[in-house]
Structure formats: C-alpha cells, structure tokens
Length: 307
Image (tube, rainbow, N blue to C red; front, side, top):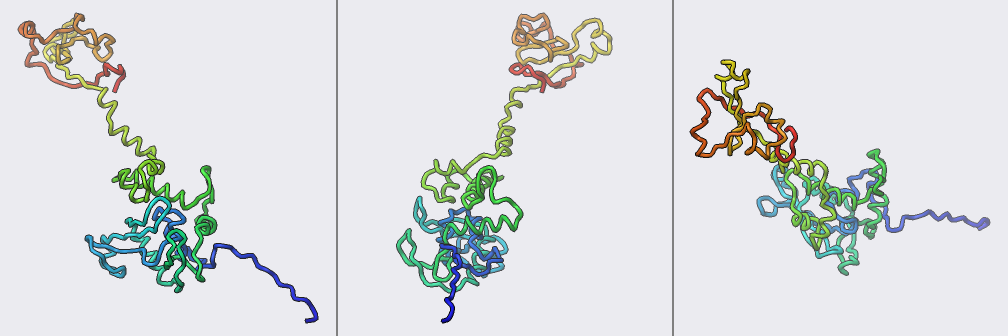
C-alpha cells in the first residue's frame, strides 16, 4: 500500500453489551427493578423466572382470561449475597413485561454464573455476554431519568436500583394493609429482621395516623354530665344565687357555675359548692325531676386545657 492505513479504535463499553431495542425501555433490565431486587440479582435472573398461579395451581402465562382477574405472578430470585434462591410474588405487570422481553430475546448460549459456578440461561444476555450489574445503574436508570425529565441524583445521592428497593420496601411497610416486618424480610430476601429494619422506614403520614389512633388527647379530655334545674331558672331563683347547675363528679355534685374554669378541682371535698353522694347525705339533697341532663365540654384535670 502506498499510504499507511489509519485505524480508528472506537471506545467500547466494557460489561455493557449492545442490547437490542435501545430506544425502547421495555426491552431493558429496568423492567425488573420494580421487583425490589439488587442490581446483581436483576442481572442474574434466568430464563423462565416468571411463573403464574391461580388458586394455588400453576397456569400458563398466556391464559389471558385468568391473568386479567386475579392470577398471582411469582418471580424466582437466584442465589444472592445473603441467602439461597427463593420465590416472591410480584405485580402481574412485571411478569407480563418480562415475558414480552423473553419473546424478542435472541437465543443465547448458556453462560457461567460466577456465584453458583453453573452454566445457565440468563434472561438479560446478548452476544453471548451477560448484562453487567453496572449497566443497570450506570446506563439504564440515567436513561429513564432523562426520558422522564427528572434528575439522576438528589440530596441523598444517585438514583439507583438499590434506592428503588428501599423505596418499595418503605411503601409496602406503610401501605393501607401493610406487610409485617417478617413478611417484608422474606420478600426482600434478608437473612435477619435487623437488616430489614433499615428499609422499613415509617412515613410521617403513617406516624400521624398511628398517633391519632392512639387517642391520647381523647383519653385526657373528658366531659362532665350536668343536671340543669329548669325550675330554678324559670322561677328566677337562679338569679338570686340559688344553685341551678349540678356537675356530676361521680363521687358528688358541684354547684359552682364556672366549674370548667375552676383551678381547685382536685380539692372538691373541702369546697362549699360540693355535695357528696354519700348515703348519709343522700336524704338531704336529691336532683329534682325538673333537672335536665346535658354534657358540656370540660377541661381535663390532667392538662387543664379546653378540648
């Protein structure tokens, strides 16, 4: 050759195979992220990892009539860093998305799984190479963030598959019918509940709902039943100072008109407005038939605050 050829070496993404359908996010490993799995578990999912059940019996994945109603989608998770392989329920949409990818996935030879040291058919593989776990967090998720118009990082750091795992765990723990800590432990594949506790974060809404359900103020704010003497009111005796309100204290009666503002309710027995309900005093005073019962709000003796 008269002139030396210049060869241009194009940079390659090591560990990031050129997957088909780059423009379609549905044909990427991101479709397994909603399962709440680690990036390594997503990258090592195997062909046939999705199974369907209905009433506890296995059914084919193309049973559209059943799938549209109440079929259960199960995901077989491979051996991971904290335990052996296990099966967990996932959303049926996830199962349908994985089966859609399986339909267009090119045939690949069996590839060695470095964790189990066996040759398996990886779900996400192309050109005889398994998708790297770094491809999910370094390429797929940033691409999805750009398409959605959201930043790839926030105050807590980069948006990764592990952030999705933590978010899903917190949502399941704070749902209307939440999963228990031990159920969430099995779903995440943790070895101990202590590890799950780091994911089970209580949201402010859940904390506020639990605080309201506890009824702290409802127990400390009480209402006092009051007998109102209508005859004393209509006859004008109440205007002349005669008692016309009788606050039922269970152990006696209080005729102080401004009982709700009284600062000495813990010393009622020594008060001139107090009439005990003891049998010895029962004959000296009884509520007349003209007394009407009502329950105005009263300050709590423990908080001395209006309800």
